[in-house]
Length: 239
Image (cartoon, rainbow, N blue to C red; front, side, top):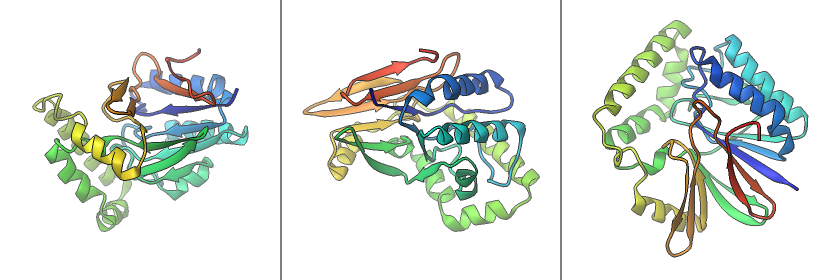
């Protein structure tokens, strides 16, 4: 039976090797069973440019390329941590980059995909920051800096983000329900899949909308499987 996998918010980094192991186990043992894999952002904990190289980055590239060579189509949508992943990375591992919002036909049903950060409009501070860093000139300037400088800046931004979260309510960091409904109507869809909030769930929204939220990866993986019969299931790895 044909099926498609969706994952997000792995936040891979050198200081959390267990996440890399979970990812590699998934890519080798489960992902080859799918016809497509969608990574909906924050594959890495941060990304400072396609010119960066490390054992972790090379391992991840190799896993994605190997999966692609097995005939599984791989897609990537930028997250709030790895929005600078570019064409070179995609070419290196035979990955297709997707825009902020992507409509797909999933076994005859139209589905909207996004990372999810754009739905959290109540977090005004973050949305202001997002608007700045997604400007092409700002990204170009950042990528012109030496790698060491970019790494220092990224670490400071990450530390500030963690500190800011301590003062934000859980409601502010979640999606805005009215904006979600507006987005459903804007794209004329009844089903949406996203990550970012780390709150794995399937929300049924009257009168006929479904919002599927991918979980983050921690002690276990969080994998969404949708088969050609429309059945939806969350897996935790090695299932």
